[in-house]
Length: 277
Image 1 (tube, helix red, strand yellow):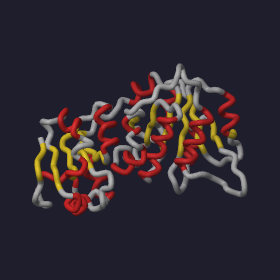
Image 2 (cartoon, rainbow, N blue to C red):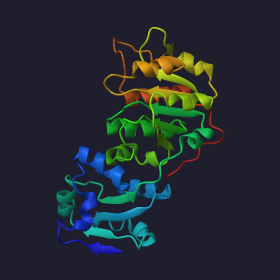
Image 3 (spheres, helix red, strand yellow):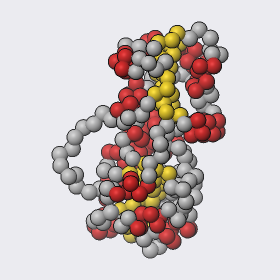
């Protein structure tokens, strides 16, 4: 249902306003049960994952690229505006040409998510949405079965997280823990060894952890500034460090996650199958 928009103040576009205001979006999106998917590729991955759109917003230039999507969802309004109108409403120049306001799926059940998992990432209070998106992209590429986030962690379905992840936040199952670090007990009761990435005198190296070949392993990564809390380090089975050279003491959390996921990944059950989800 293509609807041309002539007035940038049209209230039907309220879902798309002020996307650069992080505090507003953090308060608005979860409360109203929506998130914003940006670019044709990300929109397609969201739909392939079973997510349901509430509207689309794009410029005429991008109609051909999404014509099949708009035909499939012809009962959903697709608001059509000029490139300058999109920029005025959303607050930045949208190079990828298309947005979709998506209904937020119901939160995943942690116990169900862990039931078939062997490799899990846990994010404690990571608030930078670029880092969250990068962690999810590495998790999808390197065999992580699920991601858990602490109560104060940023939103994996925030627009920037989704964009940086290239839509892999829809591919890797994730859930938000209601309690932290008490939530680690859910992992331990499910048979996971918990390994906290941190600088500590008694840390294993990532190579030593990989050599243990744990059947079920949860890798815990901390916030950008302070790292993991003392309570989390005390609750984990091990602390783990990535050996550094040239006097560097740590990596960005997204880079550290990629190294740790690669080092501890299990052999694939069969031939790798490319996916566009």
